[in-house]
Length: 125
Image (cartoon, rainbow, N blue to C red; front, side):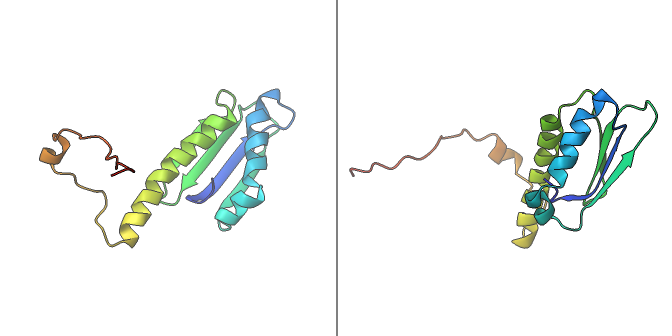
């Protein structure tokens, strides 16, 4: 989950019952697999004492920040959103490593071609 993140900032009041998503997300960030995927990702925790709603802000490796309202957004939705964006970065990285141009330009005429479906080979042929 942390692979394409440079920073995670989690803000919450520990006594606030709305902080459940923050606590769960923090635990996921400290999981061994998450840490091993990107040991340079900074995880910052801001424990608040006021009534400010809990929030999670992630910064992707390209500098784009995304802030989640941790009061109304379940942890799994936050994680899925990060993983969806990370898939885009992973595809970009694979293309660049292969020496290909990114983003991929698909000619308009190819987009209009009918799809023939999957090719199935006959095992008895």
